[in-house]
Length: 402
Image (cartoon, rainbow, N blue to C red):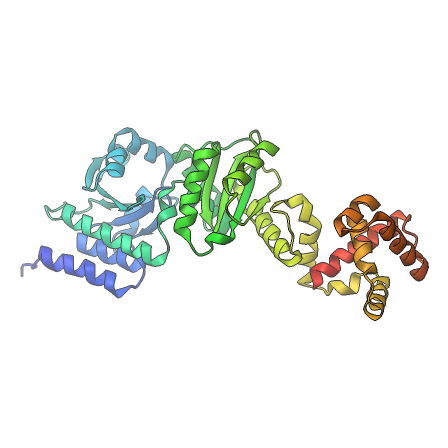
């Protein structure tokens, strides 16, 4: 008995109904492959495989074409050199390609929004392509765009290296895959780098505003990679270009915004972006807890506070503070004095009375008198290096424990 093939209209309806079902990208990929009667895979502009059909008979295809589970850089370069990739990125109409690394032909098409290409869809010709396949593939690509929009904003998906950084931060790809995708995209990273994280309060929950600020930033400050992640601008810059004047330029660009800039420690491997990003998170957390006034903070400045924050998850920091601080605090509460505040300002100013009095907006003789009262009332020697270190450490722990 002859098999009745589905009409173009029936195939189109099946694709659109799958989109309406909202059962996820993998479900849609499997159904699209079934409609197209061929294996199908979707990948983003960084080379990350977003989904590949997992229906009967397709596993062998992927074992041949994608043995590691991701795009091979050598095959990507062959595709690029053939001119097919250029056509895919520039045209909405599907493109057929034949390559030395496979016995099959491929039919590919781009997925794009108004910002640019966010993904690519490729069909492997296991069964002969039909005259309707090109038109149907365009519909599939439009449906995939809506699926991606439903999952997350697509503006950043147009940046080739965005997914690579995202995968590094979230640990959602292997080291070998990351390095392979970097090679395929010809990404060249500096020998020594820093990560800058810019949190812009004015643009919270406004990705389009952040996207505009990113473009403005890149036009003014070259030599960096910049993505939008976690409602922040995340930049990787070369240590060679990192300087006070560079940071001043960054601050000037965002002079009309309330910002917090965090600067990571140096790192040499792009895979260390994950650790650098964790330093950014620590800076933002400490910034909020301590109500830090300055907008630019280096991780080295809050390293001790970060240690305390991590320790506080297991222990009560108050138990590690010098008991004398509780005595001083009780004295302040009973007498309406500010001895603890004066002591803290003095220690944080490197025991420089002039600097401390300036910060407290008082005459240095007044501060000197208060410090003498602390020494006399509580039997403390503020010339003792070890005591001063322990007092300062304890005062910082008190602030983190609030």
